[in-house]
Structure formats: C-alpha cells, structure tokens
Image: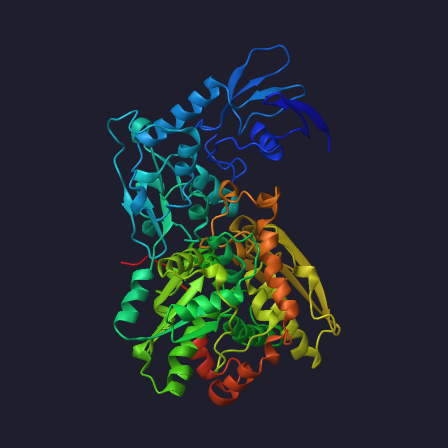
Length: 592
C-alpha cells in the first residue's frame, strides 16, 4: 500500500494512493456532502455535483472538482469550506430540489433520505429555482417495488446496482433532456419488465423514488377483523433490525425483536429457522434421491424467490434442476395453516400469517398461485425488516429498552443452528451438508461446520466434500452475475457439480433488498471500514447464534421429528409434496 501526502483544509495527511478525494477526506475525518458515499461510484459519473471541492495540484490553479471521482495526488491541497466550494454545492442541491416532490412529511424515506441530509449540510434555500417539473410516472403494479419519478434525482445508483449485482439492465435513463427519467425500457412498469424484484435498487436509492410496497395496512386490517394473526421472522432480520434503532451494524437483537413482536399483539411469534430446518429435511432428501436414483443434477436450491424469478425468465430450459421445495417461510406458513390450525381448533381461513423478511421478492412469491391450496394462501402478508422497524416505532415501543424474550415454544418453537445460517450465502449449502452427511453415513460430521462453503463475497465458491468415500461437488453463488456462469456451464453440459446454492442478492439474505439501509452519513459512530464489512458483520451475528445452539443439525430438531411423526409421515411423502413443494413456469407472466 503506497501512501502519499496531501493537505485538507490546511492540515497535512497521509492517504492511500488511488483514493478519490471523497474517500480520503472521510478517512481523515471530514464529511463532504455526497449522494454516492455508500455506493463506491454507483452513480451517474458525478453528475449531481453535490460533492464539489476546490483542489490544487502543485503550482496549478485551484479548480472545482467532483470529489467522488477525482483522485488524490502527491502534494494536493483540498479546500472544502471555501466560499466558492460551499456556494457551488448549495447550488447543486437547490437545482436537484427544483425538480423534486418535496412531500417530506408523507414520504416513507423520511429520516433516511440522503437528499434531505445533504440539503441540511449545504444550507439549501427554499424554492430558489421554481419552474416546470418533469412529467411524473408512479408505478405500483407489482406486490414488491414501487417507483415514483417525482422523487428521482437521476443519480443512476439503481442502474449501477442492478448491473453490478445481476448483470441486468432492467433500469436505465429514459427519454432525453428535461424529460429524462429512470425506469425500465420504454418507461414500462416493473410488472411488464424482466425485473426479478430483488429490491437491490431500493437499498441504494437516496430518496423515496424506489421503495418496497408496504403491507402494514394489510396487517392492521387483519387485527381489526379479529383474525388469528401469527408472525414468523426470517433469520437475517435479527442481524439487521437493530440498525433501525441506532444500534451498530451486526448487533444481534433476537430477544428484543421477539419482545417487540409480542407487544405488537401477534397471537404467536415463531422463527422461520423452524421452516429452514423443515426445508433441509425435504431438500436434503430430494438431493439424496437424485444422487442415488439418477435424478437431474446438479440440483439447485429454490429458497430465494429473486433467483427463482431469474430462472423462470432467463433459464426456463433448466427449471428441472431446481429443487421442488418451497422456501422456508412458505413451508412454515403452510404448516401453520394446516397442522397448527388443526391443533388449535381454528378454521385456516381465520388464520392470518405474516412473514417478516429481508427481501422484497418474497412479497411477489407469496402471491404465486402455487403458494395457495384449500387452506388459502400459505402466507398472507410480507413485511420487510424496514417495515417492521416502522411498525415498532409507530406503536411507541422503545426497542432499545426491551427485555430479551423467547419465541413461542408450542409446535414450532425449536430450531437448529443450521436453520439460523440460512440468511448467509453458503448457509443453505452448509445446513444441507450437515444433514446429508448424516443420512449417508448414519453419523454426525465431527466438525459440524463446513467452512469450505463460507464467505461473504458475491463471487463463486466451490468445494468437493468427501462423505464417507462419496465425493459431492458443490458450488455457491449469490447475485445473478455470478450465478449466470454456473448456469451457462449446465446449459453447455460442462457442469461438474452435484449441488448448487444460488441466492438472489449478493452476500445472501443479510444483504437482501428489504434490509435496513446502510448509509454511513447517518451512522457517525460506526467503524471507518463499515462500507466494506457490513455484510460480514451481519453474517457474524448469524454464525455466532449458530455456534451458541445446542442443536446444530436440522434432523436433530425434536419438533421437526414430531411433525413428521404426527402429521407429514416422512420427508418427501405425498402430504409433504402437497404442502411443502411447488412447480415453476417458463417465462412466467406477471400478475393481471
């Protein structure tokens, strides 16, 4: 690492060569107003001009430069607070505001809006540039994502994220000049585009232009109607929810989260880790059948609805490779509406299941016709981590002062450490291997952990696992840009793998499209490296909970064993297939 000498505001600093001025300033303790600080260049090539500073190289003149893209150089002098720089930044923000829908009090992004933040930092003045506004498009035709161009500032971050994560170009700049907007081709709805509804675009949008479709009103209505409202929470949520209440990234908040859910009035509060254990029993058995009976290989996981959407749109010829298992929350919802309701003496139609998920694609998944049977939908409403945070705040609950409480223990209260790590890329693979190893050898894997499949990057990881003389070749990918490489190998007949895990979002569910926003400008007490480590911090929260569990393999969950004994019979039974398995559709049509 080569260091160079620069001056910022008249003070000398040593910084890494190759840094931008913005990165160097942040490392040295300065905050330059910016609308791309989080995204490491995921913007429209410095077009917003919010981060302008004066820079002088050698004996050259001072110039206004965009600090987010301008590199530091030896001996450079940077001035942030000069009248020229501060005035230029203020004007840039005022020009953005001139074409912005400033209904801040009603905006769902209020409190985490980066445009509002830089407006305060720059001292932007009210209505400095009144005039015509760009024609507005509001798109809320899918259950997952809504788009409101009246709040878009044309930063291009969503465009860059879609390409970086998936290699897709669902979003782009449409029209020209003053009428320019961001949207799918020809300004179509997400409903009529090949969007996989993962929500990665919503995590990087600095304003309320891209948001999840809220289902809080559905939950309110269920309570009003006197339904038996049951909530189930995905493992990744506990690793992120604390951020909604000012806690450091990666703070595990399982106990406080349960306490909050109970105070919100849910009749039962369950962990989707139980559903994850159930998934492993079904998926592991399916894999063993394929390995021993000559089934379609490699088998690919099916618990990520963003990935399933991608497969249906782009790789319809490979759908036989997907496991037929529903995702964990859909499985658990089906059990709640059948076995649990029967145990309680409830009519399934009076039971309302709410899933709290780190994902926006889950909102689409729950409405698939395959996720419905004579008991109704498996899941009735999906809330993101962000929506749960809003619900808790709305209810006047002081989250940080809550005691730690436990999940309801009847029927679905037990779970293994294997279920916990579903929220991390590689976690589904590791959980499955723990059980497949036992099924093939009739003994537990001594180390318990399969560290070969762990990692937080969005690339491809592979391993060859020796299970008592049987070699199982596995691969893990998250983000469709990486997954596409593995899928093309299968299509070309070159794949060497038996089992592949694919997650829609880079890093897995801990980085899902419904997780808390990671915006360092709102987190002054966080570590300097938070931009590079937030996924690792959230992942560690799940791995540490796995390590604390007494039971760490899905097949050792006594309540899972009881469920099969009393209700399902055995994994992959006829009833299990009716309730817990699904089918897929090539080139699936959107909802009417």
